[in-house]
Amino acid sequence: MIRLDDVHKSFGPNRVLRGATLEVARGTSTVIIGGSGTGKSVMLKCILGLVTPDRGTIEVDGTDVTQAPRDAFLARFGMLFQGGALFDSLPVWQNVAFRLLRGSLKRPKAEAREIAIEKLRRVGLKPEMADLFPSELSGGMQKRVGLARAIAAEPEIIFFDEPTTGLDPIMAGVINALIREIVTEMGATALTITHDMSSVRAIADNVAMLHDGTIKWTGPVARMDHSGDPYLDQFIHGRAEGPIEAVR
Image (cartoon, rainbow, N blue to C red; front, side, top):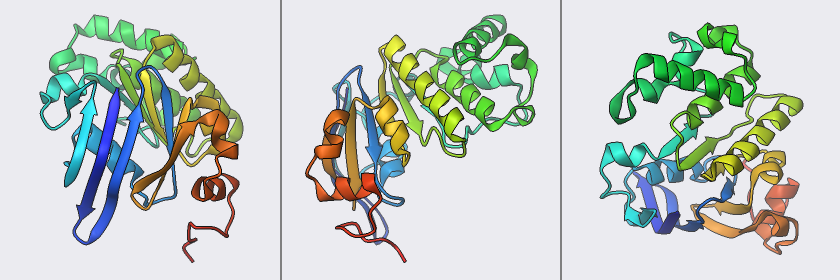
């Protein structure tokens, strides 16, 4: 569903992606891991067409992302942003139905609200939450609202950007379980960025290790602990010594 081939991207003298190559199979959940500043978020933005690579190709379902019509292309994606990224001035249901109230996916207001309430139920939130504002919700509830928004338009591809950041271990486990259930239920293709190894083990079919702008290792999550790759091994075990230099 997603294919990157020798993708390079620099910002001035800062070379962020240095030949990243990755394939994400349709209907699978792939998690990209790696240290801060290794290019994970830039890679996501390149796939979405928000950033144009300097070199290399990116295809989604066989179509070059630089050639795809923007509205129809972006309508295929859903995204759970780091920190939730909810609109404070909008009630919960309008946050969930944001894409259904405007643009090419626009629905009548009553229908959009009904879909929003259904998606809130799917992530374990009661219908009476619909008219509250994000500031009235706990961090875990806000994350669930963000997840409901990500799936509201029934996307084919869902991106999860650090889905458990700021959550306690129990709520992180709840969010991980919801992500896994929903992705499987929808048959969606999922791509996740995370530092949380418990999330990796809970939601991944496949894992890709990004370091210094390139994919160092990719494979099934079941092989992750015995990969033989020194970069992956150091990262997943949190070792100070190894090929990845700790910033001091």
